[in-house]
Length: 224
Length: 183
Image 1 (cartoon, rainbow over the protein chains, first blue to last red):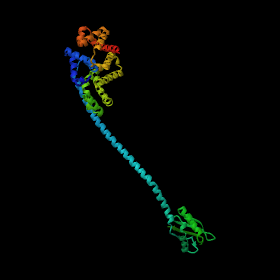
Image 2 (cartoon, one colour):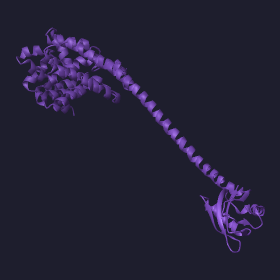
Image 3 (cartoon, rainbow over the protein chains, first blue to last red):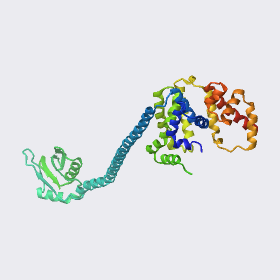
Image 4 (cartoon, each protein chain N blue to C red):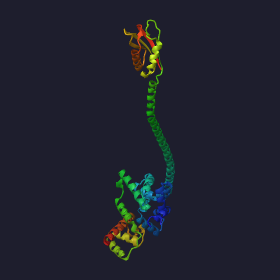
C-alpha cells in the first residue's frame, strides 16, 4: 500500500536520502529510491529540498523535534489554562444564575406581600370608626369664656355619649364658639390643627345638641 | 486492516490529544522540512513552516476524516508553502512544470501497484514510440533497464536534472496516451 512503508521507516528514509545525495548508495538502491519518489511526491519534494540545501542536518531535525515536543507540552499547559478558564466561567455562570434566582424570589415575595399590606391598612383605618365608645367634653375654664350647657355638663356629656354612633373618627379637639340669640353654638372653630372630619362631626353634634347659655365658650372634646 | 496511523488519526479526532498527533506527525517532519525548503529556499522559514503545518493539523484533523494521511499531508504542506509564497509575492521563483507533473502523479498514484496485463504492455510499447526521443530514451533506461538517474545521465549524456524531468514528463505523457487509447 502507498505510504505505509515510508510512514513506518521515515528515519530510515531520511538516512537513505542523505546517502543518496552523498552518492553513498549503490546503483540499485539509488534506482529503488528514485522509483519510490516518482510515486511519492512528498518524498520527491523532500529529496529536491535537501538537494537544494546541500545537506541533511540531523542537528536541525532534532531541534525541530524538540520544538514539536515543546509545542505539545505547551499545549498541555494551555489546555490546563483553558480548563481553569472553563472552571472560572462555570462558577461565574452559577453565581449569575443564583443572583437572578434570589432577585426573582425577592420580587415575588414583595409582589405577594403588597396586597396583604393594603388590606391591613384598610382595617386599621376602619377600626376606630367602629370603635368610638367614649366621648367627653369639658370646659377649659379660661377667663372671658362664660358659656355653659343649659342643662349642665353632665347632661351635655350624656347627650354626647348617646351620639357616639354619629362619630367615625377618634381624636381630641379644643373648640371655641359663640352662642347666638336662640342659645345655639355658632362660628365653631378649633384651636390648633384638628382632623377635618373630626371637626365637621363635632360641629354637627354641637349644632344639633342642647342649647347653651352665656356668650362665648371654650371647651375640649375627647373622642376615644 | 487498521494500520497504526489510522488508529492514531481516529483517536486524535475523538480526543484532540496532541501527544497522538505528535506521534503521527513526527515521522514525516524530515520530509515536510525538505519539501518546505524546496519552496522557501530558506532554513528558518522552512523550520517555521514545519511548525505552522503542525498547527493547522491540530484543527483540521479534528474535523476531517483522513484515510491516506501521507498524501493528504503532502497536499496540505505544499499548499501551505505555495499560499505563503503567493502571499509574499514570490511565486515566480518556482518551476510550474514540476507541479503539473507531480500533481498528475499524485492523482494517479493509486494505479501504481496494479498488475499490467499483456495488451497493456503492447499499448505501452506503441505509446512509448510517441514520446520525444529524450523522454523515450530516459524512460526505457529507467523503467525497462532499471538504471538510476545518474546512470541514465551517463549513458545518454543528458544533464542529471534534465533526466529527472524527462522521466517525470515521459511517465505522464505515457499515462495520458495509454488512457486515451484504452477508451
